[in-house]
Every structure is written in structure tokens, then in C-alpha cells.
Length: 196
Image: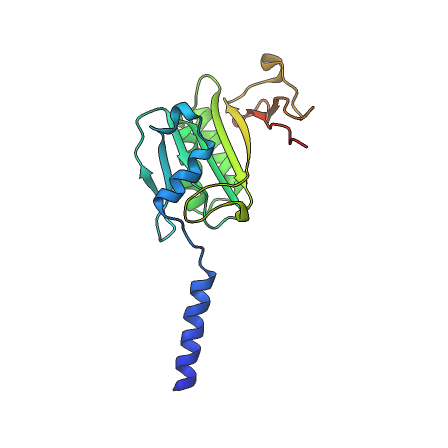
């Protein structure tokens, strides 16, 4: 009997250790806003995770920006903020992942829906800001990032090199380029150079 109790306790302990800890709503909001331009921070809508790991709205928004807290199950920290013109596209991606779709299936489904006009996309390039950091650079309690990197993207379906004047491969550090040109997921990428 004592052996069974000991095993049960060890099993419960291993489950607890194996589960990802989830920061408080305040901490998640603080970290998510690192990706948000200052002029939008006060009114940005914030999506994050409850203590069960479910994606929820942590704060309603009053402007055109949506921010997404870091997924507690991923390695490192990655937060993003984007124009609400992209929310249908982003939300659809999250729905398809929840349904168990592969990355290839997700792309095919969203392409079909965009081409059919049932998945709304911006008519002009819409911004996405992404901030990444190592786990050890993140203060779990306060949400402060001690060090991080940012990159920018501007999404609009079926942009071409000809219309944008951009190269379709990275050229020089910090130089914009067009990723996935001529496709439903085309976007202009800008990754600032790492300072030495």
C-alpha cells in the first residue's frame, strides 16, 4: 500500500513538473506589448493564455492593433502584434491548428478561402511585429524582457517583385525583401541587422 501511494505521489509530481508554467495575465500583457508600437500600446487588444493553457482575450482593445502573448509550450519567447485587418487570417490559422491540420494543409485551406473571397485579407500591406527572446531573458513574474530582437512583416496576398521593386531573397542585413512572392501569403520582411 505504501509503495502504491509513493508511486502515485511520484506520478503526480512528474505531471506537475512536465506542465508549462503560465505567467499571470499582467505579465503576459507586459511581454506582448514589447512587439507593439508605442502609439498603439494603450488600446491594443491582447490575446494570451489562461492557467489551463487555453487562448483567451486578456484585454479588449480600442484601436486597430492585436497582440498575441507567447505560447507557454514553445521554446523561448515569441510575441507578436499585428493590424486587425489580419485578424481573420491569423484566427483562421489558429482554428486550423486546433483542428489538427498540418502546416501544408493549413496553407492550402487558407489559400482556397482567400481565393474564394471567404477569408478577408487586407487590400494594402498590413503590419506584423514580432519580438523574440531566449527564455532566460524573460522575467516570469513581471513580464520584462532583458534582451530581445524584433522583425517586421507586411502582408498582402499575391504581391510580386515587379510591383514592389523588392528582391525575393534576403540581400543585405536590414534590407526589405519579398517572401513567398506571388502567393496568397506574400509578405515584405524586414529584419534589423544585429549590432556588433
